[in-house]
Image (cartoon, rainbow, N blue to C red; front, side, top):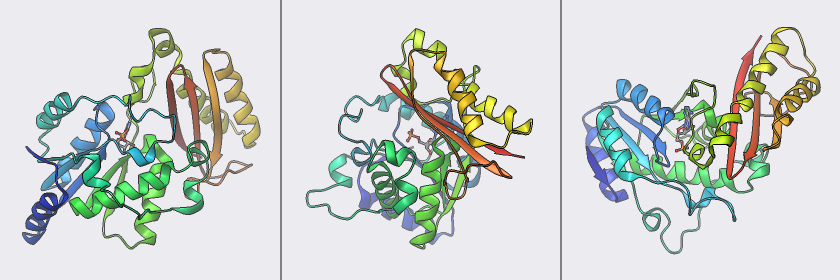
Length: 281
Ligand code: AMP
């Protein structure tokens, strides 16, 4: 497994692989691997001749007062896990390599990046879209893998690829969960024992929404009210939002139709957690 830190070197490797007509797969991450990351890598491994995993904690997607500095990092462990899966290249540039002095250009994805998570975290998706565009230019992947866990992120990236005619296929894979339903996340390490115990209520509220919809409830406000009622029983949780949206546009909808995405964000102690499910009737 090669560890590459420079963009130019990464591009040279990518050009060589492309010249031979081989397929490059990319899994972009911020490191501190968990089962969700590993699942993306395993799936990507099957389709890629050259599997590149990027590890880069991207400062531009963190707002002021967010956890950029304290975001968990453990490169040695990440390298061991990636090696076990058979990753070919770890691309882990320094912040200065990705954002040298004088850096000016950003990718702005418009409304789809300013609602939901974008409303709670202004500038977040501008940072995400910019770094993913830069990673695509460094790694030149045919396939790029993302998790449903960050559903809005996947919608934003797909829109960017479509609007900017990027020649890369976006693959979105299911959310990996702990046995009790909590979505695996690097930020789960922030949870105390007590907080960890109650955190699965977030997923339980999503499953409640699914049950209500399957039973015939169509009024989004009613569904959200029932979810809030369940979550509010846990006093340690500060709910930020629940939204029922069209999975294509992420616009909120009042009445449930064929396919909807239910998403939420909540703070539990130091951790800000997000989760979502897509429900088909
Ligand atoms: P991150 O390192 O948190 O930026 O995540 C890197 C990639 O892993 C993103 O595409 C995430 O959506 C994906 N991911 C994170 N958590 C999960 C999970 N629990 N299940 C599946 N994919 C995930």
